[in-house]
Amino acid sequence: MTLLSILVALILEQIQPLSADRLVRTPIAKLATFLEQHLNDDVRLHGGIAWVLGAAIPSVGLFVVHRLLQNTQPLLAVLLSVGVLYLTMGFRQFSHFFTDIHLALQNGEIDEARRILAEWRGQSCDRLSSSEVARLAIERALPLSNTHVFAPLIWFVLLGPAGALLYRLAQLLDECWQGTAKHGTDETAELASFGWFAHRVFSLLNWLPVRITAALFAVVGDFEDAVNCWRTQADAWPDKSNGILLSSGAGALGVRLGMPVHDLPPELEADDDRPELGLGDEADADFMQSTIGLVWRSLLLSLVVLILMQISAWVGS
Image (tube, rainbow, N blue to C red; front, top):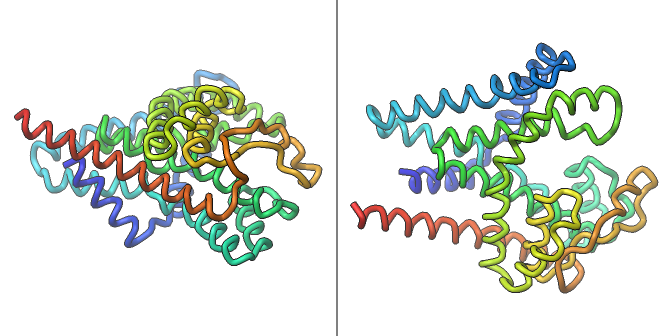
């Protein structure tokens, strides 16, 4: 049933892409704001209580409901699994930006590619070259493939639909409570203190998927270069998890990522602190196409592994 649910959810998402902002991100953002407004009184423990209310309790409730349906209404259990996966996992939740940038670069429309990338990143990209646009797009897509595809899939296999829901709720609550802390204002510093527990839990939940995703990139790409870049370059990236994914993905693709981005406006000078990742050529539209292939091959490999595990279970029984 696990494999069937995954396949149906993936097919459904390709046929009818999910409006993730309207159906997922906006409701969770409202929940995060509600919990923060009512529980954030500068006591760190209350951040943990808010996370339990916002992520743990809904996930435990889903786990119980799914178990009951498995024993009484197996078809409803499958439908529930498909619905949860449809909401928590999917390429289309992030890939439309990447695809549009790729098409713009292929057509030589550099200004349009810059505009789309700026919308995606929330930062001005008016002075970037076509290679820098492709590089930043790949750097954003590889971690998001873990966040939106492989990590929910892994936790679904481990814990059922409750696992996929727990991961997505943990990721979004961490994003709401922790992601803006780097700007350094008093308000965001207080919010970061409130979100410390959410950030710790999400880091723990993301630890295994990051490494499995990086290993998939290596297996379906240039294995030797991917492993070498992972081993020697990942620690240099400011965010260790993203460093693992980017170094492995860059090595698997044979492309160079990271490195300073030149001709940025003054407000983005902090982006210049970017160590080099990967080996090979400068990023371009062709490497963006290769990135799409890398992610799809990784997904197909993971599905093959699941099929073999299912066959092994049937033979064993």
